[in-house]
Image 1 (spheres, protein in one colour):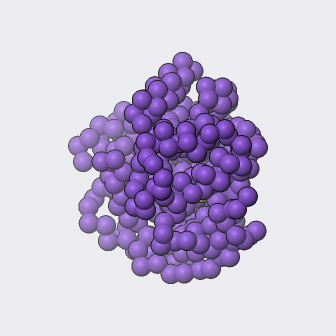
Image 2 (cartoon, rainbow, N blue to C red):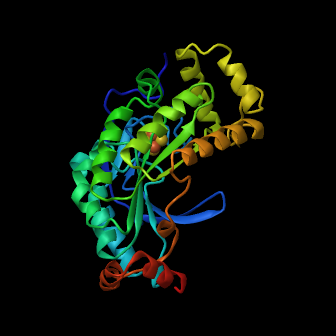
Image 3 (tube, rainbow, N blue to C red):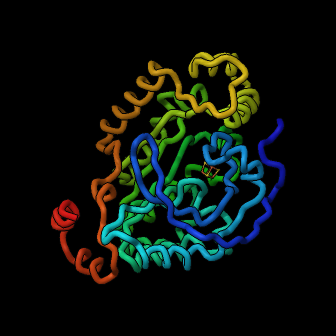
Length: 323
Ligand code: SF4
């Protein structure tokens, strides 16, 4: 099998950044994000963060060594009194192995907490356990999300070889749930013919329910030319009969997929998968959404944060509504 990464262990270099907090727009939703690293050792074949301008995304990781200082400077000179919750991270895993050495995510989180900024974290890692106490003391203002695509180890080792097994992520989630931190699971991406069966999804959702996860959501894989090349390798490695032809049918394209195109699965397929996923989530008493408090702006400033912390959730939301 030709892999999409070439080195057993990626090279890691440090670099300086001029700016660390950036706006993003996804499907009309705007937000803020910080990425303490560029590149990712988790090496997911379906990764959306790999682009033509970043061919060594899996093999060379850049640690933005001044991330926390730049973040603090940006927050100090923030033009508005309020700020949206910050996503950590949109284009890398903030708790990939490099974090053990560089602590950049931890330092950025400490800055966000000092400035009273709400944040939500997307990770596939158990390394986040190191920061359990840090997130726990900020539990009213953060939301931690693990992206879990499969409980099938054979499939996981192939599609996301740098991630820990789902069982390890569930053990990690339990520690945070028990500590009172709001946790979510993102079943994303759901891979047609590979991880989209009802049984496969139920395995993930049943574990979420047992653990006490409140929020679960997910999405179907989007295809781009570079992702498609990796998916062909995955489909062939799994010996999925007519897999390539079936993808062409589900994504309604004919070879070759042109660079620059970003395509969704056909509506009939996506609607069915998402409808079933939402129903299974709801049947287990969980919510297909973000918590409300993660969709509201918050006043910047540690003194204000302390006041807000002492208020009940209802009072906090009322305050945010008027900002
Ligand atoms: S963890 Fe996220 S950023 Fe890292 S390789 Fe996987 S999909 Fe890409």
